[in-house]
Image 1 (cartoon, rainbow, N blue to C red):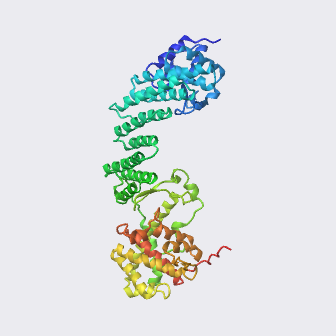
Image 2 (cartoon, helix red, strand yellow; image 1 turned 180 degrees about the vertical axis):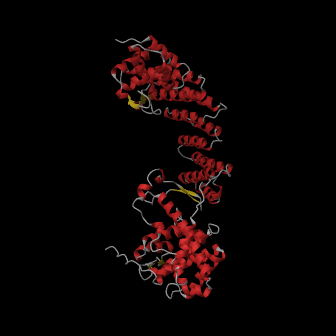
Image 3 (tube, rainbow, N blue to C red; image 1 turned 120 degrees about the horizontal axis):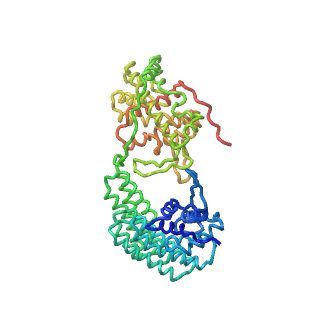
Length: 568
């Protein structure tokens, strides 16, 4: 029968001195100068015991560990893979070691492995952990020692509760209460330790109301810790006015922290969002309104973000090429039509894009709706974020060329109002009075009054599209009973374009340009509802381009695909 090797036992006791983790012990033990075959075998078994890990304080069946047999070649081992010889070595040393930290671990492992007399293993593990806690609290490394002492007390309490060891359970509970009192009275901030202790005490059916109240007050400067303790307290109060007071305190904690952090950008936004969410979930409508009102008054420019990028430099040759395209026009109307494309280049689908966009760029990302602002996440079926971002960027680049082409049209033709009206007017889609209005949008654009240009052009785009779609797809729903009839607004009109024969690429481009509030430019809503300042010149050019594109179909400059047949 194997015997305890004195050299290994001495090395183990040396490794246990002032250690605040089993891994720290393992490192010292592994470096010990031991060369006999028996000693090497026993040391390997003890290293396995020290490096097996119990996740949290849950069921003990979860012991696993990582071992290193060579440089950068680790492998994982679970307790069932431990050999019978190793279990015998653990049993020998569990009775031989004087350090309670090691003894508790060895008995715990043997208990879970089902090796030896079960009552002895239970009491050996629990008493070992209880004895280790004071030693860990006295260790030179204060913070790790405090954290591991807390875990030892929780392990001891869980073992005693699970196996009905009332005396050990009482000892563990009293030790956790004493440690919680000690930490709460300490000037150092250790909210995570207190939280772990209170969680353990709840498991032991101890009334933590008083401790949770003290902790919420003690850590009021850390809103997240304060809320965690208030929620622990809430779990002790089932109903009544006291429960409502705690719910109110949770929401107010976030609101007060947001008020204190009025200039901290995104942190304040996050606090207000948490306040609104908690108020909603806890059924506090007045506080929810207060949080949402504060969100609405958050200035997007205060979020504290820094946009990193570099200036887009477009080669001059590209501008010369697009201007040459205008120079080839026979008249003003032809020049206007030449600013558009049959298939919108920004929306063309490429078969290789999916492969090009693999990797980190395809990770879904939350965004900020700057009108609120509120964090939003797209539905799972939404288009890939990166793809949409690229489409918007290409739209912006196209707008730069379009703005330059419109400037060149003004330089070449210097069109008077009557000439513009004649070029734009159409008897059905854009009668002369409306053509005069749209002409004003172009003239304001050339004067640099981009806000006026956009405000005038946007309603005309919607009206032109509605008139174009009217003979091809249903855009009106008749009254039914008490429900009044309706007419499709811009969003519905744009989504009806493919069914009317328009390229889906252009429908998607107009959606991103005019009405997509999440990831697109959303110019119709942002401009007409006064949600942004004057839009940049190149985006106003895109609005005018949309009107030109639609009119080009009305004038026969382009033909539509056959109408989509309705499903049977």
